[in-house]
Each structure stands twice: as structure tokens, then as C-alpha cells.
Picture 1 (cartoon, rainbow, N blue to C red):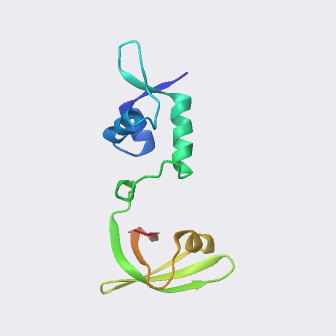
Picture 2 (cartoon, rainbow, N blue to C red):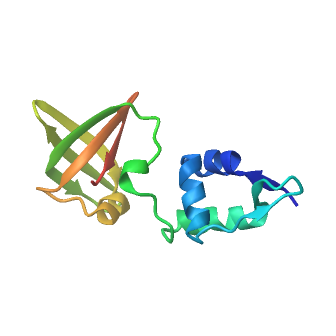
Picture 3 (cartoon, rainbow, N blue to C red):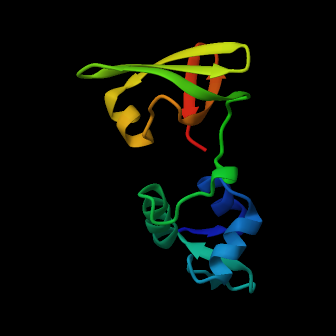
Length: 132
């Protein structure tokens, strides 16, 4: 059975080592001691925690959301056009107008509507929209 160090678990979960320590100290993530006395997380416990966290039971705080997207634009939704499958979302961020094509499901899940404040993240030719 594999076990993981705090650093390895942090990397797999996309958080800092300190966050993993806090989760363990708070009883949210089970840890044990190995033969050398180091704190480790048993593989199946880490997998279960990762699945629960992905399901929203251990949601990531908004300021800890890992992303490789470097260009972020905080703005306001100025238009949403929805059809059966896809949607077009327009965001005004200062002088910048951004348009993103997303699924109808994404619009519903994020609660996107005219007047909602969002963060549009641009990477290559993709726009990612986050609700603060």
C-alpha cells in the first residue's frame, strides 16, 4: 500500500504543504507515522479525500484555486446568450470586452447573468470564467 509524504500529498492536491498539515491537524485528513516517525498519508485515504474534495465536500478556498492561467480580468457580465447546448458570455473589464463560448451547463452552474461580477482568465485562445 503506497503512502505519501505531506509534500507529495500537497502536490497531488494542488495546495501547499501547510494546508495539508492544517487539514490533518483539524481532523479532515487522516495521517499516520511511518517507521522513522514521519507523518504520512495512506494512499487510499488520500484518494478518498481527493474525491471528496473534488465533489465539493472539502472545497478549495477561492484564493487557493490552482491555475496556470496568467492573464486575469475582473469584470462584469454584460451579455449572456444561451441556446440548447452552448452559451455566449460577454464580459466588460475596464476598456476590454471579452467574449467566451461555454456550455449552457457552465452558465447555469456558475449562475452567470448580466450584472454578475466574474474573473475572466485568458490562456492562449481560451477564456476561463470564475465567479468570485
